Length: 331
Ligand code: UT7
Image (cartoon, rainbow, N blue to C red):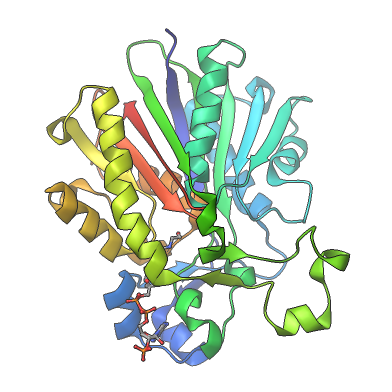
């Protein structure tokens, strides 16, 4: 059976650094609250006019150079994102056009924080069946433009950053590659973490003064409920990846989770009986960049030598939907 390898990867974050001290000026918050509740020290926010496609192009070009492939080699683009520059079409077609790719299949996956692993799972099917040879998968989100940067929105406003991470996926030439992927969802919790507008249920998609004044176009999160589910689902889906591959935690060089909150990572480590050093964290630098956290973390963990050729790693995510997912990879 052909396996899917990550043959190139890179990431890009906006230049503009927003520190906790900067947020103290905008919201009724404190560096101490943000650090102790989430572990975040700073995040990057786009400047006006910069969208998810702009971040993605830079990450994608760098991942392609890393893999030694050209735009003409790419035969599918998948953008894992809820932040297209426009209501539609998505980011993937913007990449196809701006990067001068052939008229290949290009589409977005709107699965919030689990989207990168969902995208990896979809890409894996196309590589395994031989239908594609070189897929560009980008995880990108820009949520800074739907945050309420005032005291009312402080509960979520301090958590999110913008970014993009890209990987090139190709058939493996040895026994390394994606070993398994697992996707889950439970839509009854969709309102616990959502952006309601613009929505097709509403006249003019909900662009009315009344609905805007009610802040229905802003990100809402029931933080405690999300936390409660996340600390249960992460261990479950990591265990699922281990079991199906007859692996134990001792076989894993690094678990790379979606970066939502350092306290979630610590709780997952405790529940699984492992040290926090097995579970990668870079949330202090970027905050929660939604679908971009995993590829960004994977790049940095690799650069820091947390895993190398021949090692097993596990990617795991939990987020809006609720959705959760994992992937086991032999590097
Ligand atoms: O990627 C999507 C997945 N997202 C997540 O996984 C996030 C999961 N949830 C969390 O990480 C945590 O629930 C939060 C970090 C969002 C919040 O932490 P918490 O310990 O659950 O705090 P809380 O919401 O229960 O709020 C505690 C207190 C409240 O004050 P009172 O009612 O106790 O007086 C809040 O008003 O903290 C207050 N508060 C703040 N204070 C200063 C809420 N936000 C802030 C803030 N600065 N930014």
